[in-house]
Image (cartoon, one colour):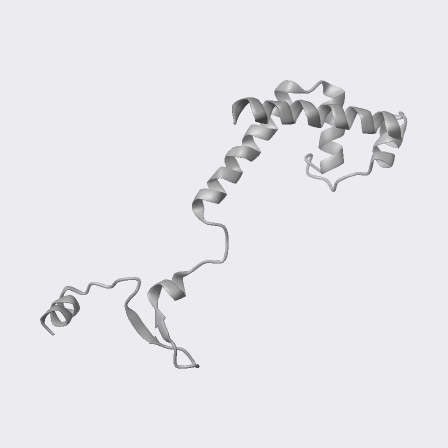
Length: 117
């Protein structure tokens, strides 16, 4: 009893303290309410770091044509992603050539991630 009274007086709240019951009469804790289904901060930060690293690699490691095709293909220029056929018409080259350039560019980017990981 002393500890409960002391805790209430100090206005301490713990995440696992019961704060009520749900409609099924199960005990609810503060951590249940604060629980977030979204990515945790570590995952989000890691994702942002990898995204920045990818954009840096695109700018530094790829030739201008490779860069242009990758940006168009995956919508990295703020527009919707384009198909290889659409890109081939835009650049006036064959679809298979677009495919080869895209494959080569992706391999270069993957190498960069393997080296630094």
